[in-house]
Image (cartoon, rainbow, N blue to C red; front, side, top):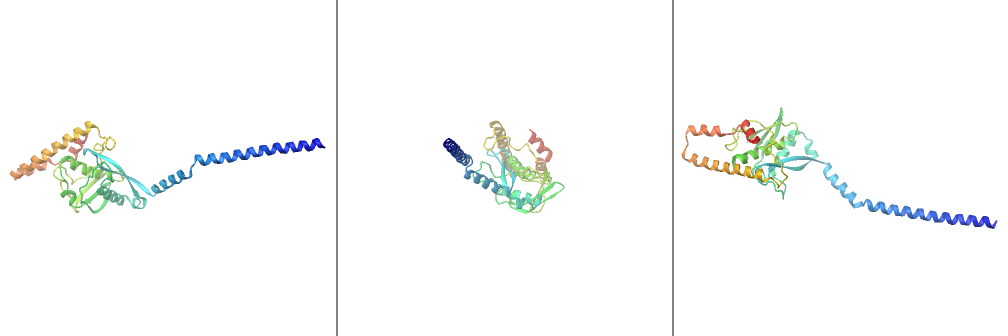
Length: 258
């Protein structure tokens, strides 16, 4: 009987030891779990996600730091705005372009200051009609390259919308034959990928920059020569010659491919 009691007591002691070890292991596992998944990091992730879940990303194109190409900038539009239809979204994108690049960006504005949307964008048969105020023309500095970048910043931004294949321009509700003397704008402009820089923002290649800076210099020289000549010559022949200098869509495409 005494031996039986001793055996039972020994078994009880052994069981107590194993139970204590098991509890210690469980407590240790719980502590390790908390360290691997901090509450603060989960909360931050949820906050960031909720901040973007009600937004639609759109890609805008502004002039790069070197002033020779277009570079993209992502902007987020409220879903409530984006879901009102493609024409409405196109108008929102146009207004965002007019605002210019984000503060602190290395990109340059592409649309003249003071420009406003004269009437909302309309879309018909894949052509988006953009109607801008007179400041779009009057306050633009001119120059072949600068005109090209301004026009295509709008065209490429709006053709990010799949329904839009090309863009037609109007000024104060009317079709205008040419922009600032270098580009014909009474026709619809299709998207051009060639004018978009292949380099990261702020890191355009030296070769690319040098080539386009040379073109900018040539453009400015031509503009100055044209201004000086116009002071002395006002003939009908000159007007015809000037009309011939206006770029057509075909000529623009050839330039972009060079």
